[in-house]
Structure formats: structure tokens, C-alpha cells
Length: 177
Image 1 (cartoon, one colour):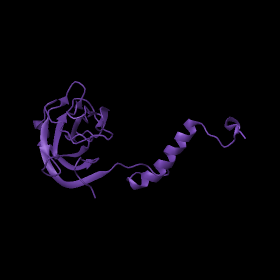
Image 2: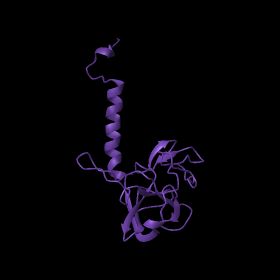
Image 3: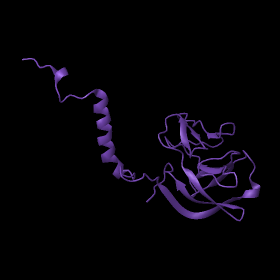
């Protein structure tokens, strides 16, 4: 006895199946990964740390990065502070162009030290798998193997002094409670 599956009413297209599967997996995974459910707004993971002085506003020169350690010292605590010369997501200062990012690739922990590209305000490529990140758009990945944005250091400007006080995202090798 043969059955004609093309006329069966319970059949779904491959697109419908994949879409339904993705929704099912997301519904299960999202609450466990810190994201909001469908009726709530998704919130990014923010780590808060003791506030630390980074630099004076008057000492910053456009496209001349300052490297600093935050939130602690160690192999993955290296960060870059830079005045991009154009507005950026999370930027501070009168032009909203001063940002800071962790210098550890989110994919496999490769160092992004000395990879700042002023012509397109990016970091990378990572020497391990060539990931690059856009510093004007909260460190979103441009190319490469990384699946997460580069952690952005949350900055505060007070009386001409720049302070770091938190991290937007997860630093490779660190744990946030």
C-alpha cells in the first residue's frame, strides 16, 4: 500500500519546519542564557566593577589609542580607549566619539592589540581566525569566526576625567555573576 505524502494535510514545508524548530529551540534556550522572553525586552549582560580612572579628556588625541587594564589585571584585561572622530554607540564626550573595548577576541581569545584601524574605526583582524569588530556599533563583528560582539567598556565622564565602571558583554576568560 502506497501513500501520497504530497497531499497529506499534516505535512509542512522545509522552511516551515526550520522556522518552527528555531522558535522551539529559542523558547527553550533564551531563559537560560539571560535573554528575555517574547513579552519582555531583551537586555544585554552588563558586568559592574569598581570604578577606575582611565585618562583625562584633554589628553586624548583623535585616533591615538590608550591601552589600559580593566576590570582587573591579567591575560584578558587589556582594553583600548580611543577618540574615533565620529559618533559611536555608547560613546561619551561632546561628540559621542570616545569609546573603549576589550582587546580579546570573543571567538578564541586572540589578542587584538595593535589592530586598531582608524580609517573604518575597527579592531582586527584577530590573528587566530581573522575576526574584525566595528567600534562605532558597540563592537559588532564585521568579519570572521566570532559570534559575539566585542565587550564594550562602559565609560563615565566627570570633570574632564574618564572612568571605566562596567563591561557590556562577556570578556573572554571572565565570569560575571
